[in-house]
Length: 636
Image 1 (spheres, rainbow, N blue to C red):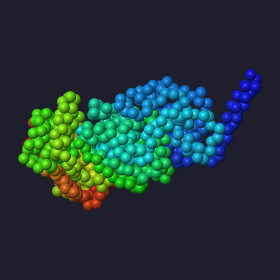
Image 2: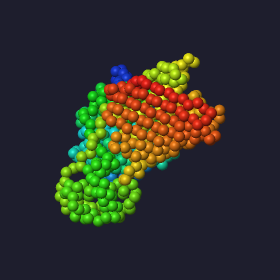
Image 3: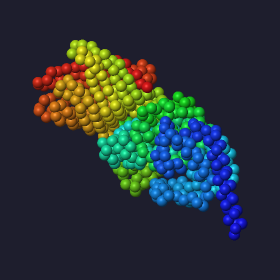
Image 4: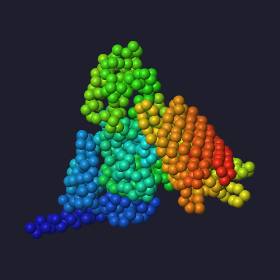
């Protein structure tokens, strides 16, 4: 017995001595100052972006974190696996995450084995990095079953950044979204796995103002998830009708595995989600930087991060190989409609709803190709109606089956060609500075404007979804005889003009909050506007819209007005014309009419010229006035 105790005691002394040896080597070489180690800790400045307590072995998240965490991590590598246990609240978190998987998903579930919580298994990227420099020996024997099972199942070989464009019916998605696709042994990308980071909230069911405020100030938790790509395709392309762009990265297979290893380290984290900074796009940048040491994508972002800008940054870092377009279901349906007559479109709609036998089209006196395309459009419409809940499951199954039987009799046809929009990488960047000449009261004034982000409907549509705009923190000033004057200050602006036609019934809306001079007197008044209405396509060159818009503003006390708004927005390549007429009725029967027109010309990608004309007409008491502004816009 004494011999056994002595052996155990010596073993403990030996392990402690070995651990201290590696700690001393790490401190002597200042390995904790290595850029890659800082990346693995998401450390920037003086602290880590990660605030989940289970991500660290050291206790304090400050400037000494890299050093303290390296010491604690080395000690954890030599911890006896039998002494490792999963904390109860983390165990509960893992159990809940398992319920998030689709019941048909074959992805391995998260493990609740204590051994899988050992440092060597929890932090494979940290282990690879430290072992590269320290060459660990006599490590405890640990079976990392969960990590190896997932790695063998996903088999990551290729990394692709995926950008679903803006969702026209959701202000939360006006910036678009990015996630990483890990392509494995299957050539079909639909069988690959999407690495997504998102706020833990259903944005479609959340109050708009509450959702915006909580998102801006960290009221939500963000988390990573691993899902089959076909599920994300269904969500973005089919349900939300969003175009998808894929950007394959030139990472080697070894680098892709390194990316996966770091994903494994952060997969169970729960951190604060911030719309403008710690959002979906920013958090996948850490994964890419963990894969390749010599890139620093985050250096391009100081005060905000939005999805399109991260793609631009990856392009500047020479990470992007190519860009691939996946059209939304909406654009696929439009492509079929553009190839068929109105008569055949209406028949396709009837067939898709089960109101007309699909075999009826076989006897039509039309070409074989038109028959094929009519039935194919019927198939797409039937699926669309089912996705939107406009058709019960059994009706969908029966209708889709009948259409498929009829279509099978017509043989193989040519694939429908969906026009590829201008690639988003050709679009201008988000921040905007303008210099202009402002003419009012028969005098010229010099002025300037700054907009933090992102895009409005007077900007060029190249690379952006037409009819969607979001602006945050915009201020426009001019200088007159009295000094610096505020012409407009916008805190937040959201615009979404969804097209209504024979198939799609989208609601148009907009929300604006800030200061402007559009009210009864020529002074900047604080206002909130929230409008709703509808929009119609204008010969595929733009759209016209109508909004009913209540306006609350402050002018010697709270006031209210109601506006009827009519607008037209048309563009072709680098040219854009936006005209809006508002009839605004005030509480005291004063009636004003406002015309606001902007002509925009893109000179090159991030440089444009513009001229704006605003005229305010009043039916009594107040004097009519107008303002003409002309200048240059620079995007960066």
